[in-house]
Length: 246
Image 1 (cartoon, rainbow, N blue to C red):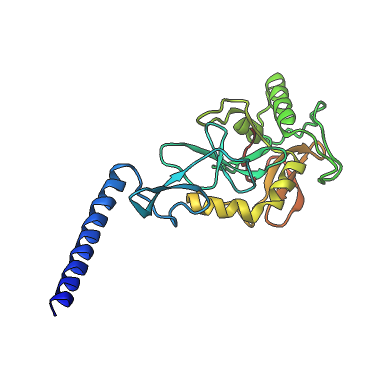
Image 2 (cartoon, rainbow, N blue to C red):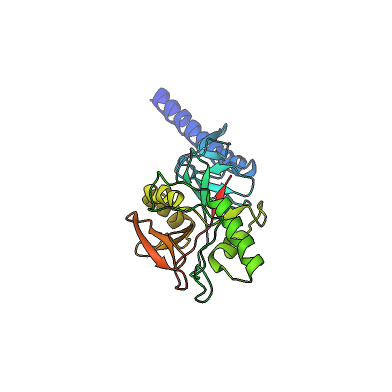
C-alpha cells in the first residue's frame, strides 16, 4: 500500500512540476518574441521557441518574387503583410518583374477632344502579346508630347507622377496592351492578394487604359478579368492602375 501511495505522490509532483514549467516557458517565449503559432506563419519560415514548441517566430526571409507576392518599398517580395513595412504593389509577372499599384483612378486618356496622333508613340494595330511596346517608354513620350503641345494626357500624367515609399516620379508608368495582357493572365491571383491586403481589387467589369494608341481618336483599353480589348475614345473616362518594373 505504501508503495502505491508513494508512486501516486511522485506522479502528482511530476505532473505539477511539468505544468508549472509550461507556464514559465510560455511566458519566456513571449518575452523572447516567439508570439506566433505555425498557422500565423503559414507560407513563411519559422523559428520554434526552445521552451515551447507551440510558440514560433515568423521569418520574413528574402525570396524569389512570384505572381501574387506583395512588393514592399525595399523591392523585396513576401507572401504576407508585414508589420512595419510599406506594401507598394502586387507582383503580376515574375519573369519581367512587373508589379501593379495599390490604387486606381478613372481619368480620360486625353483631356478634351483634341484627337492628336502622337507621332513618336509605339503603337499597335491590335492589342496582342506580339505587339509589345514598352509602357514606360510610351508613358514618357505621351507626357513629353503633351508638354510640348499644351495637351493634357491625364492617364499617362497620373502614372508618370505616381510615387510610393521607395519609388519616385517616373518609376511607375501606364502599361502597354501586352503588359495589361500579362496582368490579365494573373488576374485571379493578384486579386486574392488585394483581398488579403483589403485593397480595392482589379475591377472585373472595368476597362483599363493602355499607353498605346490605335489612331488619333482612340487608344487601347483592356479588361483584365477576361482579356478582352476595346478601342476607347480618348476623351472618355476609363480606369488607370500604374505599373512598376522593379
